Image: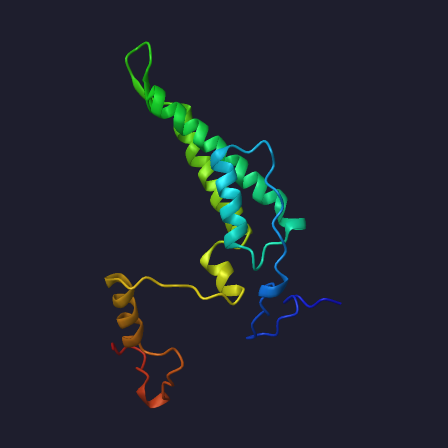
Length: 167
């Protein structure tokens, strides 16, 4: 029987599902229906995920992602050619439907890439190093985290405020 934690003991970590460097399979050939942008994305996805992507089980999701890249490119070309907005008969300026379509398709691409392991949390779960930016916000968060009191500090009964007292 499989435990509800999928084999991970409480407080434990999963073993990384990375393919050893010497056993990395060749990526599948890109589908012929892919355009230039889709073929470029196909190569980049398989190159970047070569240590964990499985050509047999992940090819369909990669193909869907790459076809969507091609669709986004077509819509973006149309929007560039015809403009992002149009005017109605009453003179109202509205965004073309392609604007919302591109936004939705890009969100779908992000979802598929996360499913394939291209999110920081997925890479961390696989045991891959996740780089954090060395900027002012990161330094501020680190300082703030260091100055916060630990959650496992004991509070003695004599130090607790009595009812009606303010701290």
